[in-house]
Every structure is written in C-alpha cells, then in structure tokens.
Image 1 (cartoon, rainbow, N blue to C red):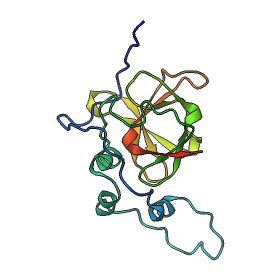
Image 2 (cartoon, helix red, strand yellow):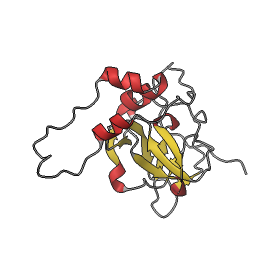
Image 3 (cartoon, helix red, strand yellow):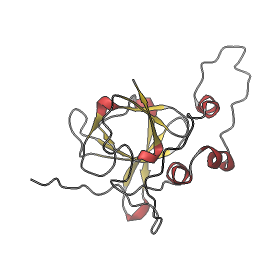
Image 4 (cartoon, rainbow, N blue to C red):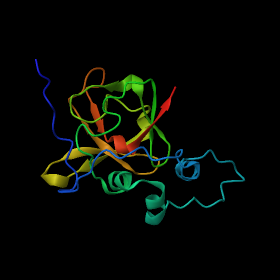
Length: 178
C-alpha cells in the first residue's frame, strides 16, 4: 500500500525556491553556543551583565543563506529536500545556530511527511512551543529555547508514547555521532 504524505508543515515564502543547502563547512560556532546557553553562576559572577544576543549581521555571518532564512525568518525547506529526512545514524541532532542539543536519533521516526520527524525532544527544556497563525492556519511552532531559532512545527498525529510529531527542517539541524 502506498504511503500517504502528510501536509501541514508549511511551504515557506511563496516562490522562495529553497532547496536543501550543502553542508556548511566548519563546526558549530562555540562562541555563539556559549553566549546563548544559560550558565551556572556563582556569587562572584552574578553581577556580570548578560551576554547580548547576536545581531542580524552576526547571524548572517554564522549561517548559510538558506539556514538563515529558516532559523531567523521562519522559512520552510521543501519536503523531501533535507539532508536528514532519510538519515538513520545513531546520534544527537543539535541546533545549527547555537549547538544546543535538541533531538535524539532514538526518538526519530519516518512520518512520510518529507521532513525529519521526532516524537519528542531530547529534553523538554530544549525547545519552546509558540502559537503560529501564519499562512491562514493555526499551528504550534517549535523554536530552539537557547537561541530562538525556528526549527519547524509540532502536530498531534505522531506515534506512541507521546502522540506528537515534531516536524523539523533539516536546515535547522546539525548531527553528531554518539
């Protein structure tokens, strides 16, 4: 029986032509990861001011053009175009913007939607859920809690044990082997 494709992830900006971007060279910028992480503080450090979020110019320098559009402007890569749709290695999926751990390969499943899908994040604190009323519909947007980068959307049609499908853009992810 043919697999039914699910829709509802969004199609990005009309005429955007986003395609799977090549893997951008270099490791995730550790300085950005350190800026956006919530550090443990001591009494001596408590007086230090918070590190400011990266500017738009800094984001553009750190991300490839398609990654920038997805993470910073909520664009969506076309279905079946992402490098992690058919990826089945054991490891951890991290935010390409800041390096935060987002999803485990053990929670990944084939949803038939055209995007990498997970039934839960690595930890509940890894992501933030927001109401998204764009494109004439109401959905739940998934963003990286550490840097605020757009990851995708979550739907209530996933497998047990959660019944959720975190439908995530490959362009927002980086992968590390266990």
